[in-house]
Length: 56
Image (cartoon, rainbow, N blue to C red; front, side):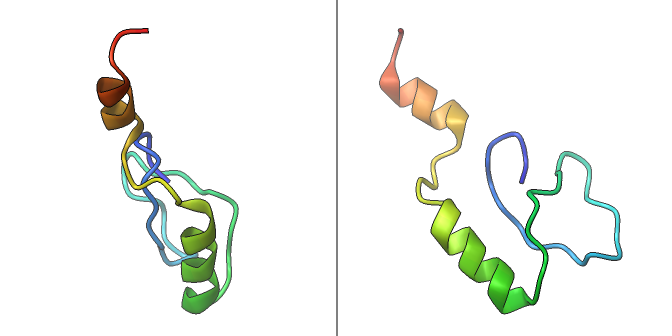
């Protein structure tokens, strides 16, 4: 996951790309994709959500 709460799958034997961190799920591609489908329910990045919500 990155700071904009976007998800990606990445080979376990490689370092994460710059700006990305482990989310805690490992497994087959299918298992990881299923996890992403379950947890990534709002595709809008936090910066966009804040902008749409307007001033607090």
